[in-house]
Image (cartoon, rainbow, N blue to C red; front, side, top):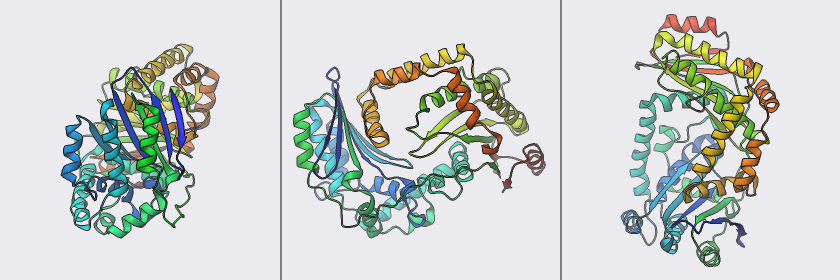
Length: 427
């Protein structure tokens, strides 16, 4: 059963009681991520995520780790371009201790400069990991190409030069601007007593107030760019991203684009997987994925292949994109992908953690709850005509962007320049 309660300070509590499970997951979501940072603050959201685990007025970092282990639970956090999330999953009888621990981290973290200096090195290592992982790196490079100078183009981890100069006061000022009660959603899913939970929430979070600083900044939609960027790097494969216009996370056509993505490259039965991997053996990893934000979105195809097959793989990707734009999908494909989407949706919502995620995202995106039955109905309502309309509108050459990373020779770069005559940069 779904419930929504707004505390007197503006914090939203959204819950779904699932009496058939023995677990409960609590997620505290802040509606602020890397896109909300000024250029000189790049990486602050993610750095704060790390720092809230480094000790409070009453618990050391070691105490925090030992306490969650003693509960037999899981506690973690993650940062996206639009949100920062802290969550804990425990057995239902441990809900009071888990909520107390989560509130202590969020409300009473010390943010000692000594701990900040140590954590700088941890985050710098995380940045280096991305540089060493070509699949992560090319998606970072691709975001810069597609989003240009928009805040959505910046890496969530930030830049090394910014991280090195972080001070405690910088983080406190950032939190003052963005960690306001009205921008916080606490989502709880699992087995719990609603009235007891509301009392605990009021006691632990009811006094939390925003600072006098109220300017949290303004988001604006990104203008998506086409073009080509090629970067030489001594790797075993060339890694490719091909990008197209997508739609925002809460758009009315979201289930249509889900279906398009599934058929294009979102599964092992997809056109790209079958054509490029199964039929021709040109790639081990080939897939497409969606990135939906509050006001814009993208569709991206990723592939890794040997240097000599880059042009061929790009031609096949381009061909499948054109086919989708020109002919949409068959009734059989649409029927199959609808069943796949419904099955994946129902299986994904079997855990309290997944339900918690959905509760929070529904609230942040739409301010309301969408039931499983409503989602199934929306999937069933997708038509071939809708698929054709959306694919035709989004999958255009003018919006297409391509990024390549790997052992590309100067001759290959020149050939690609001639074959894909879009604006191009290389390095």
